[in-house]
Image 1: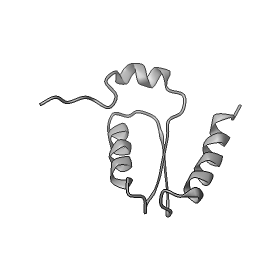
Image 2: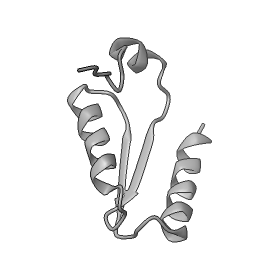
Image 3: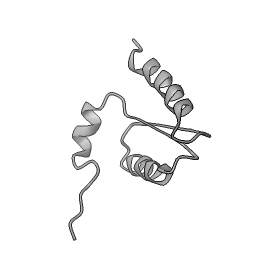
Amino acid sequence: MYTTELVPEIKATKEKLKLLWIACGNKDGLWRVSEKVHLYLAEKDIPHVWSVDSHAHDNIEWDNNLYRFAQRLFKN
């Protein structure tokens, strides 16, 4: 069976990564996939933001997270 690591070069990723934002509403159909990515990153100690709210894959979810992501992205 062929398997692939989500992040094959963990050390290099930690050195180069500036901001990794993962957002998902807890009513989203992809909740389990997003949660597994978050758990994998946490297990590998890869810094990231895991943002969860009580919405689905909708405009409210996107708007809120785009706003919060942009605040971090353009922070001095």
